[in-house]
View: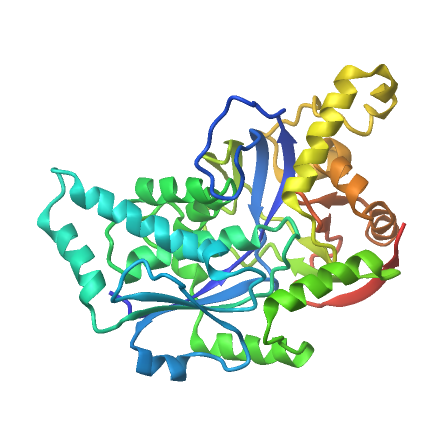
Length: 410
């Protein structure tokens, strides 16, 4: 059983995202939203130069000092779930620990493991695992995250952290939960989380070795990140300051990242068709394509974008004067999910592929950015509820590069 794990947390993009109107009678256990819209989508794991690195280990309080990075904030449970084992998180997070999806993953894993122990069909070994969890001399479960995936980008940064946490903690704590149980935990955490679990397991019981990292790679990534920007000792203040600035500055900062087609040769699949509220995941086998991510400093609020989607749906239904917008905002456009991702991108527009782009662009200054990107990169597309755009890479070169430029706001 491994005592520590370094894992790369890659983002996802939505090649297409079709949303159904919300069913007011539906119920969900999702901890982030009171109810979810049903979707039909093609998810792709964005394998390239943009990723978080997550480090998991069991350690004592004395050993924590040598494992943590002094420049990154540390978060501890206010009320530990177990008196003899405490979860400690380290990372540039924009929320308190109890609101962090990594903490929620830890909590639901323990709850699920305990529920299975209480079943008469369970054997004594599982009871021993839970008992050992609270009596081990390694009193801390330490999780350190080097965050690179932007918040509010539509790339699933929080969701992939949660999915990897479910897999890694199940392994490190020797909980023995099967894949179905882990997926049930994932579904309770958010509609994107099950996709990442399926992709990171690749049809097996354990994490695919492709995603493993190492201490040297983490150290180099940490040095690169800290050399680019100062890490704030108070991430909440930094987050709110950045959000405020994004609404008032006259320009919006954007950075591009490559997604390469030749880095996933050892994986069976990197794409999946996703339905329902994220619980139906059908692997889609296709040749990976080269893309460019266009991340920016706008943090789109998922709840607000979906609220605007609902508002547009209501207005379109109730008033004929909104019919003029139907060619730009149509959730009735059929997308053939039997076609490969490149074909979908070549044959459909951003409005046809993603039902959330129109509502997002009514809240945030995205249209001027889209026009500038289109002039430079050709057709661009939108991931999730935003704010990240992406485009097909015209050149098949595999060299990585980053580019920063600015857009005037609308």
